[in-house]
Amino acid sequence: VYADPRMRPETQVPCTLFLTADGGYTQKVGFTIGVGALTITDPIPDGDPAIYYAYDNIDTFYVQHPTYRWIELRNRGTQLPITSDDQTIRILLPFVFKYYGQRFAESLSVCGNGWIAPGRYTSAVYTNQPLPDPTSSNPHSMICVNWDDLYPPYGNRIWYLYEPDSHRFIIEWDSVHYFSPNTQWDKFEIIVYDTTVPTPTGDNKIVFQYYTANNYISNTVGIENNTSTRGICGLYNGTYHRAQAPLVSGRAISFVTGEPVIGITDFSFKSRERKSEIYPTLLFGFRLNSLILEKEEEVTVYDATGKIVAEKGKGRSGVIERLPAGIYFLKKEGRKKEIGYKIVILR
Image (cartoon, rainbow, N blue to C red; front, side, top):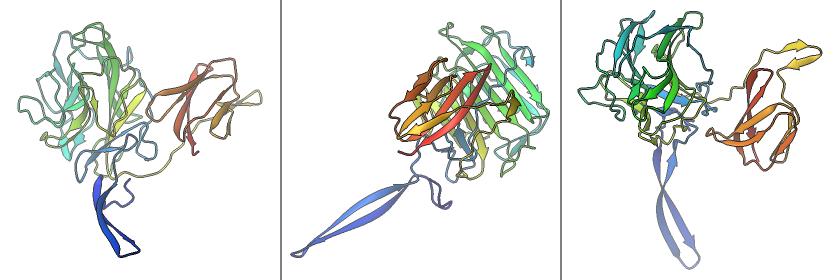
């Protein structure tokens, strides 16, 4: 998609086709060829030229794509003292937050309605808007993991924790309910990495993670800059950006600066030997475009959009027939672990 870094995404190249035939027949046909069209497995730029890009965990042909690894904070982090509806509380960051080139002095505003913003804000706006949102009454620099009308006192509220060894500050909305209907709830988190995790511009890397996806029909997911004139809107009121994968349980979205880098990274595991066996293992083979599963763990196969395309129960082998060409993800469950594998079927 970005083979030539000078080529703008989604450029329409004008072309002309000249047709000739015996007898002096000629015809000229004009048409365009789309170059760099964004698809669901591409990153989302925040403008042209772009500063931040959004990668989700199915953008696997790009080195910058994230891997979903949930970080649970309940009873491990500090609970944010939000006790009523529509509250925003300022907390101190243990590092300077550089965001869109601006350095914020170790201050972060956390709103119960599913968003944060570097700096000092008292607004707790719950009526979501598409990003960027230049509305003067709303904060700037909004980072919206799930901007909606939430009610944190229902559920386990909001937790935060700084892990200096991994250079990340985590904020988790833990089973937080919606204001209406209050029977619906969701669990998600924002991870802000400090500047020791480098990006090409020195801006901080941000990751969204979704443990559930119960009510994403009237919310906003994305980021904007400090003037609310540039941003990324992956989801607004049920409408996804064409390059945004649907939000499902196990989705991760990473916001980083710098040009996209094409490449394939594989899962890596630390194996350990036990009674002449190596764990973890998954034995599989291919027969045409069928996947032969020989190990007796429970296996679920997802396509590149996160949709389940096949499942195999524990205690039996199986053959998954006639998978179309594409990228697939296998999740193996067993021995109190979940392990992921990536498979590419070419034909």
